[in-house]
Amino acid sequence: MRKLSLRARLLLLTTGLLLAGLSLVAAVVSHQLERYQLNRLDSQLRSFTEIIAQVSPGGPQPNQPARPQLIDPALDLIGAPYLAYLDANGSIIGMLRSSRVAAASFPTDAELRKVPTDGSAVALPAANGPGRWRALERPGVGWSGTVVAAAPLTDADATITQLRTSSLITGAALLVLLTAVGWWALGRGLRPLRRIEHTAAAIAEGDLTRRVPGIAAPRTEIGHLATSLNTMLGQLEQAFTDRAAAETRMRTFLSDVSHELRTPLVGIKGSTELYRMGGSDADEAMSRIDREATRLTGLTEDLLLLAQLDEAPDGQLDRTPMDLRTIANDARHDPRALDPSRPVTLTGLGDGGVPGPAAVLGDEDRLRQVVTNLVGNAVAHTPPGSPVRVGVGTSDGQAVLEIEDRGQGLTEEQAGRVFDRFYRADRSRNHATGASTGLGLAIARSIARAHGGDLVLRAALGAGSTFQLTVPVLSGQADVGRVQVGDAGDAE
Image 1 (cartoon, one colour):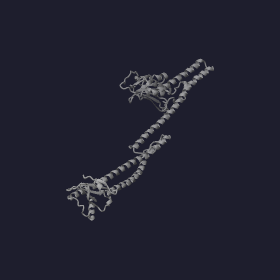
Image 2 (tube, one colour):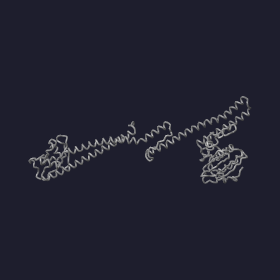
Image 3 (cartoon, helix red, strand yellow):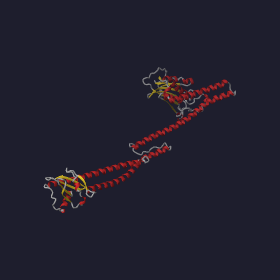
Image 4 (cartoon, helix red, strand yellow):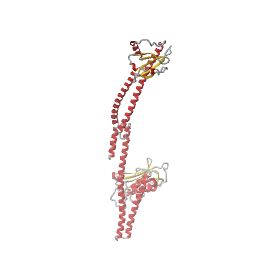
């Protein structure tokens, strides 16, 4: 059974149920028809025996000559071609028989004596074997004998046999017809499943863009299945795409890590070889080794921090209530320390107004690390003396701190990749000069997201860049800390 197709199994099940139903209907109809005919014949026999018992109060006259030309039509009319008179001892003392019925087919005298006298009808076998008779006995009125009337069941049995034969032929023809129609209908009904099967086969061969077409109305079972499959296929395609992208990023990341680690290690090894060959004195060699070891340690610590933020971001934070205005106020002094000629302003959001309260529940050291990195980028990647604006406030339930510069900006492709690990917009910068390894912004965004916020960039080529740090506002704590920010528009 399991080797059969779904179409064949459904058809077998349907055909079996149809066959059982037709057989049940045929059996019930034939049974009811048989009961109807027997009841009708019993009613005729009962009426006839009741009349005969009443019109013969003096008993039968068995010695009267038979007159078939009168008796046969009368017996045919009342439907009882056999009438017998029995005395009190059960012996037959007279009878009337239709000459149109063969004498050998009448019930035997012994069978007639078995008929109950309570008026209930019974079936008796014919004397010659195959036929059946229906008999009914009633006590005589005014005399001590009984009257038995019997009628053959030949016509009734023939009718039942004909009905059963017709039912069998009709049922077989109907079964064949409905089986053929069912095979066609099931094939048409299962056609959407075959299309789903073909789609699945195409996907299994690698075509993840295939989808199940609109093969049925959305509210039908097939429609629901197609919609669910398309949703699942979309998620699978996205998952495979994400996995491929992740693998690509991982390969790039490993390549970059290898390169970044190899650079200071090569410097350390080169310094030791140069010292061993006498090309430099001990102080110079140790200075180079210390510088490269410091870079190697910083890179390792950055990689470890990124891994920790990826695995358990909340576990790396020591949250306390604080206000971003404190960090923003301190941040405006950092550019001056790096470039005294650079004007720095502290404002509200959007380059206007005074700094607004920005109470958050955060790790102040980590958030300062983010802002210090952003300020350092603004100084490193903009011309000397170009202005920097630090804005702080709240917007849509988020505390916001933004760093805006007036530098050359970034292209759309560069802006989309600045948060990638080891990415540098300016590849010409030499590591030996102390340039960033490209992990600072990746770490900054990971810290922001660990706080439940984000770090985004708005930039355009020739129009400067704006980094915006957002952290959820600490509700009910709008005035955490007292910050002296001076005049919002003052420059330093």
